[in-house]
Amino acid sequence: MTESGRNCRKTDVGVLYRTLRGVLCLMSGCALNEKEFFSCCQLLLQQSEHLRDGWSWEAVQGSEEGYLRKTVLRSVLADCYDAQKQTETASDSVSPVSAHPIQELQQQERTQPVVATCFHSDGIIGDDGDEDDAVCVLSEGSSHVLQYEYHILYSCSYSAPVLYFRAFTLEGRSLTLEDVWSSVHPNFRHCLQNSPLTAITQQEHPLLGQPFFMLHPCRTEEFMRPVLQEAQEQPRPVNYVLLWLSVVGPVVGLDVPLKYCTQLHLSSLQRSTSDLMSSTVETGVRRFARKTCK
Amino acid sequence: IMADDKDVLRDVWFGRIPTCFTLNQDEVTEREAEAYYLLLPRVSYLTLVTDKVKKHFLKVMRAEDVEEMWFEYEGTPLKWHYPIGVLFDLHASNSVLPWSITVHFKNFPDRDLLHCPSSSVIEAHFMSSIKEADALKHKSQVVNDMQKKDHKQLWMGLQNDKFDQFWAMNRKLMEYPTEEGGFRYIPFRIYQAMTGNDRPFIQKLFRPVSPEGNAYTLGDLLKEMYPAAITNDGEQKRYQVVIHGIEPLLETPLQWLSEHLSHPDNFLHICVVPTPSD
Image (cartoon, rainbow over all chains, first blue to last red; front, side, top):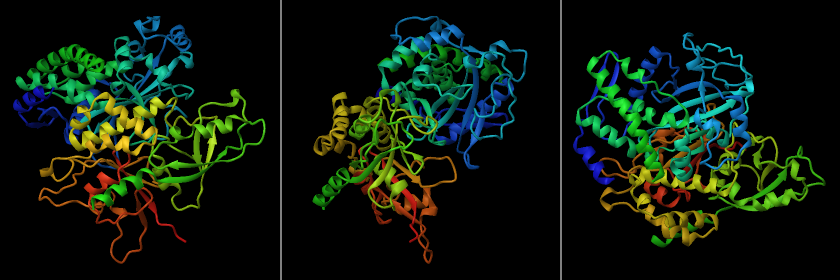
């Protein structure tokens, strides 16, 4: 581990480019500092706006400090949700839910430009009322529609992004950790259960002070290092936060469309980043799973 | 000086807060519940040390009226994942002892409090704090070099109130290369009583030693992170800066505070509370 760390620093290019369109980060080392985090988030945000993927930036007290936020509505198939609730399953039993645990409403409503991304409803989301969200009308039985909220924050302790999330029913009942397990990909469920520090735990949101679930960041540098090393050897500009998200997002049911890379207008960057991202999702996910299983 | 420093460690570890637990009057009971008195360790966690409180009140309740236990002080749900001493200093430092806490067994406020279904959740939280503190102090090198049984020793020391057992292991987390003059960054959190915003605490990167090699003080930290807490010359003192129930001098070196006044989780928890107006 220390060995690869040393190698990483040797191939250090250490340059940060700013373009008119956003920021391309050539990573200096394998850790992410707060300024880089902010820049990566702004770039991700730009692309999200093009793709209508629903991410927004929540600033803290008018500073550069803040976090990315996205709300997703999911309908869970009725029988599967009930089955999940009733069974205290062993981790290796395969229920109908594990095959296709989540149906993203986005996939079903491709024709509608404003999808159920940012959801605004009385009594569900707290008191941040300054969003320009559209109201999404759902005809499903509301008890089977869940609202997931994802936040990407920066951890100065681990020099890495951290994923926080929480989920509610439309009636406002908070989902418990047990409920949330059903949104975790079956391949990860087993691994995460064995490794408490990369597991999903309930934590206090460091900026909002409310309970959220969190994917522990202490191993992030470990599984990002090989990916970044590969990028630095080319050298390829990468968006650390986007790459990181493409690895950890799927673990908790958050999809990161590959289209993020094809949105960029620089053709060489387009090719290299999308190659990297598709290989990242595959290898990074495997590495992440291996690391968490220790 | 060494002997005095060790005394500080002991005083911190053995600090206690006399507390009176009263059952929420809306709870359904079979007969009247008496208050329960307990000395709470400042450095521990509510859900770790209140088994006796739970047993006491369960005696007068029916099982069907009992859900997850939670605590509240003057309407504010108490966050069990904060050290007890921090909760007291933040919410009740200038009120009369014993500290009066209300016990609830219903209507768990899941928008405010983390769930605590078992002591393994407390252990995971505690160890997570220790690991985060070491990430700041030593880039995680010391904690990662420890074995699983060493981690267990830290937890068992806290759980069983064993100072020597705990510090036999914790002293490793308090070491640093002499040439550095201190840790890489100081693990700290600054809590503000009654804030207008949601932010529960301030935690940022801060080095204990300046590039010129001078030791930063508590005052330097506050000037950077929470300047409102510093009283300027001629002004009336608006805030108290409290650590383990005392107000350390602002000239105290931050490195020394981190080594001696940290909680067992290896964080320096600093409460900024309004000065009482008598």
